[in-house]
Length: 458
Image 1 (cartoon, rainbow, N blue to C red):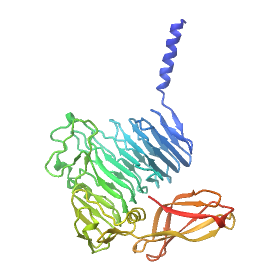
Image 2: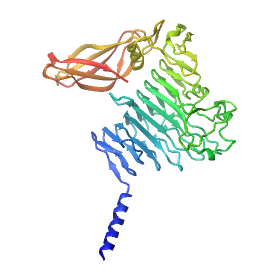
Image 3: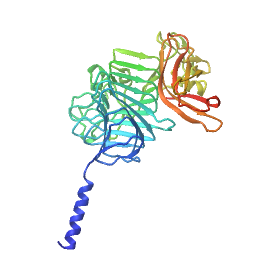
Image 4: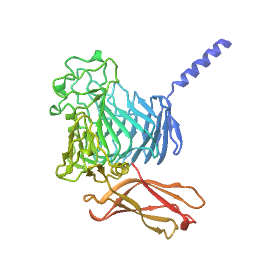
């Protein structure tokens, strides 16, 4: 073989190697930069950090354990599969995100969902990473000529999806030209709980303006009464204790006789849901809404006020007073109305704790207190057990409250460090009195000089 032929053969082998996709088993505690074409497996309980440094990467993540995924400037755009699968039953997948993150199904052949699970008793938790600023997550599914699935699609009626914090946008892919398939729900699961953060609903039709037939996507075809736009949350149980559900887009999806027209910018035109679509909230048979707000293009609904009470105009950005109904719900007309709090502390208590809203002439107040009521010692390990107490004076309905809690400690010899960071459930025997919870901390030889700080966050 000549030298020239040998070099040519070597180049061919190198080029062929770069095209081979790999199945990679992730290591708990490590940070992995995703590579195009690979399938990554999380098979062991633990925490995994994924990044693409902001570059869209065609990859697939499969989870078969109790896993926390930290997405750090991670952009996944899968063209051949569901980007993120939860495959095993009785598992919990927690997605924490920092910086900007995207999970997108870009297939033109299959209606893939960005986050997908068929396993029973599976749970998905969505929240920004502790301490993260401007943490966002964008989800968008793919659509075929005949069908589209919800972007978060858990097929089992025993599954749960819980949103705790952060800024999440879920974009459904609408019908393509000439089809009769539904515009899907944002989330399909057994139970959906909105406990905090901002959830933005969008429609992103997957077609170019030149492909849009004049007769397709007429406003009248989008009316909920015709069943073309699915309820936002397809579930059997819906709970909202805090947070904001809103909608945004380059244009507002019309409701009536106007046509929904795509622009010349292919695949990236986003549409805000019409007010009537946000009113078609859920298919759930069990609904509990005790806090938070739903803000549409022309009106907003707020929960958590005292029932049958006149609410002063200082409590709303529109400057109008309203009266709450028998369930403590108020509806305010206007362009994206918002709540006005009297103090930043009240806003934090309302959004983190989910405390009832107290209307005043200076804005909204909210009251709660969190602290340590007792410290016990484990007889075997000598580790301290903190008895936490949570008091929400005006909460007369709930007997439990689930919150992410941090415990920090310091001694005369050590700086303040986080020694506990988990979501725990506070309980009380009746709808009066304070909530309590136990937290076991690492043992320390200097218990007498140890100080503890308790934080609740969302």
